[in-house]
Image (cartoon, rainbow, N blue to C red; front, side, top):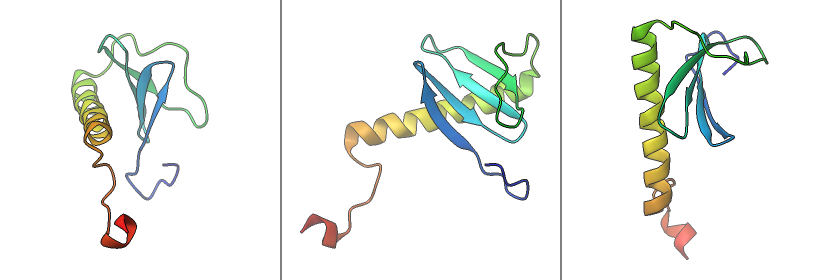
Length: 90
């Protein structure tokens, strides 16, 4: 996530909200399904989201975060987050 040569990102849950960290913004998906953008600052998250975020970034990052959360929750419900090999089943 902190390597500027990659497009890596991080997903985490805190205080009931999901967060997706990119190199330029942190996206929050709140419990009531609101999407917020925060300008990314190394090792620091501003206390308030952007008042007038870029609509394209808000939509793009919001949809990506919602997809990640859906994948995660479906994987938990279906027990399909990780593939089981035949050796693990034994």
